[in-house]
Length: 323
Image (cartoon, rainbow, N blue to C red; front, side):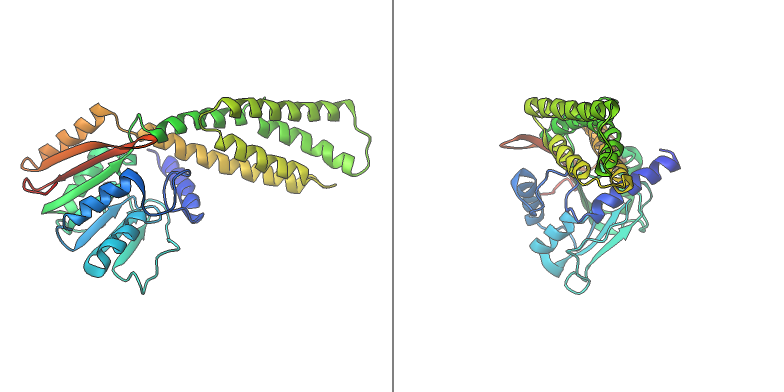
């Protein structure tokens, strides 16, 4: 990835984590933790931490450190790294003195010495990196008897199905026939009418274009398995259009800011979809780790719950590891 691309990615994720969300998927519950993923981590940590120092890579706002502290308390020391700038609101330096967050850290270049950690973990984060380089770095900082445990996106998961559909919604919102363009076109005419101008044929056409875009959005949402993005965009944009006064500038600037937020959301969703692992990618990950540590035991499984597949669980460690 180019330096410009990495900077854009870092900015998009920094803004997302600054919103206070705990998880990387916008529709994920911030309750920490329910479902198959929570069951996996509780089972994993209940088998024994296998040591007292743990590294969480691509931590985001730290759902895993939060869970580990709930389960293990101060018995473990946790370092949590992320490419973006993170400062989780839940983290209290006094109550969580053994949890340290490190921003601006690439998994491919971890700022820790060799054999520093008893465990390396990650949830919906490791797969976003250059996997070969990231795996080598995780292996380098892991002690000889350490375990590496990863929860990663699955190409056939519920999140991927939602993500792929939301990318279509993003694309439509940005087209010439989409709601963003329709709203931008109608705002100046509304401002003139607020000043007392008589509606012109151009104003009526812009209003008709806007109403048509709203109708198309409603039709798309009605048949979508993941309509939330469209419905949120409809409500946000309509509020902005309804707020137009005699000066159109505030609404125009607000629309531009909202469009930028949508662009960041599209980038995050596209990254999620692009970096999900299929069977072959998971097998390749295991093969590469077997080269790094020929004596390691590697296990993986599909995490499922009522909604369907939610991800992969992949664990590597000593040949006598439990579970």
